[in-house]
Length: 268
Image (cartoon, rainbow, N blue to C red; front, side, top):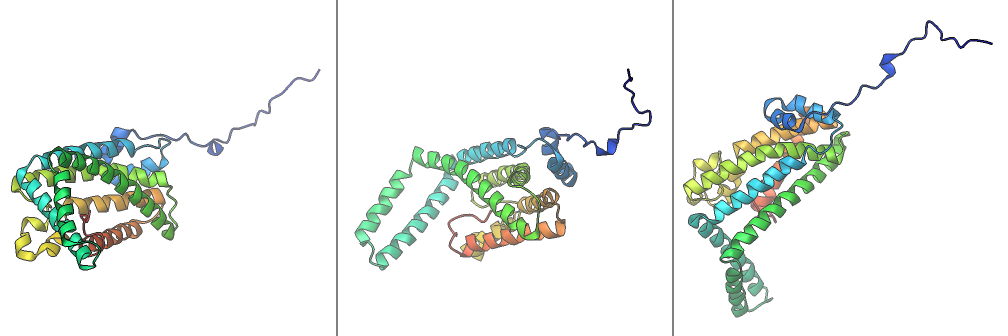
């Protein structure tokens, strides 16, 4: 009988064996956004773990809810919000009356009914619900826009990769929201942040200019830069491509939300 023999010179090519994917821990990824964003997003891209976006997004939602509650408990801020809402509704009703779509009496009655409906506890409830859905809609829509836009540069990132970047950078947005809310409560004015609005007043520069300046929050600028770095890493692109792209989209939104058809929203 022939004996089974193993060739003595048989070697295993270790280079052909794929290295196991190592997952960066969620806590390390969250901390890394602030300490080493480039290396962190590179590790997130290589990681077998997919849902780095969920917990940071939930944190942002909780912060948004708490911010809404604090604002709706401040009489000065509530008064300013209701004044702005009344002015916006009155403007729309006046245009409807001018176009012959409704009578002046009907417009005044509808304005009064709307104010009553959004008074008291309903004002708080709508504020909380609006903040939650606002965060979710903006998050997923922004991820979709970035995902599609980066295809122009032949970026390799998938939709979940973009969500991971936006989710982790949402931690910066949470900090921004905390700081802005504290400043608003302390100063008794909306749209307060660490930026030019601390140096000017709406009465001095006008509503549109003040709204425009309110977008230049230094923490938001920080967020945009880190988001650009993250998008570059997960898309295999250069920072010189993604950071200008992120800022271009942001500037377009700022202009549309300040002077264009989305002027009822803030430019963030």
